[in-house]
Amino acid sequence: MQLPETWMAITALTVLAFAVLGGALTAYVRLAEKNTPIDTGLLHGRAGAAAALLLLAALLMGGETSQHVKPALGLLALTIMGGTALYFLIRRKGILPKSVILLHAAFALGAVYTLVFGLPI
Image (cartoon, rainbow, N blue to C red):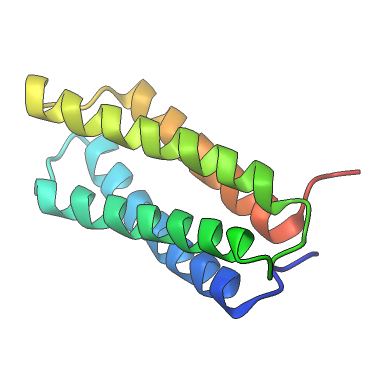
């Protein structure tokens, strides 16, 4: 297990964990055919984006030297793009497709796994 090295990256991992928990709650409610307030999803998205920015700042400042941070940032970028697509879909159609939710969740969990455990050798 290779945890991030700097306090900023550890803070990013903590914020990301809370964003994943909020996303899991939001996804569970949607997959149970109920609706959640859009503010819940926006709060979840803002936390995830803040975690990605903290991780990027830790990498750019030079304190984070682990090689598994860059792929995690790439997965987080894909996750953010998926979340943005979800936001525009809900604004346009009023309901979210389950397939896009699950794809978004897969990218997010992949990013967290890569950040915590590193890449398999």
